[in-house]
Amino acid sequence: MEEREEEMNAGLLLRMGEEEEEECKLRKRVWIESKKLWRVAGPAIFSRVATYSMNVITQAFAGHLGDLELASMSIANNVIVGFTFGLLSLSALLSANPFNLSIS
Image (tube, rainbow, N blue to C red; front, side, top):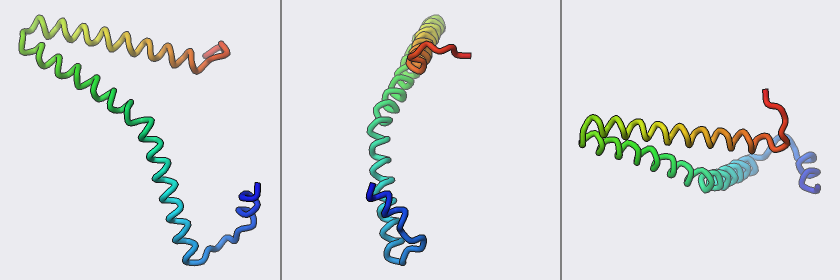
């Protein structure tokens, strides 16, 4: 509460030293927030890259075996990825609507 009153009573123009100090505080806050975001998003990014890399490498090896093996591997990957995407979409829909409201 006191911080809000101080903000309301603060002058609009800052002295030269205060302006540099505010810029340092802003940089520090941005850095802290960025670290928090990367802590959450980093593993998800790594997981996504690893999954797609595994699919590409698997298809490359299946392509060396023959055309039939490559085709079967491609179909299998598409079915698995499609099924996974469907489950993710369903879970996102259900978690976004916990009170069973109609979605139009």
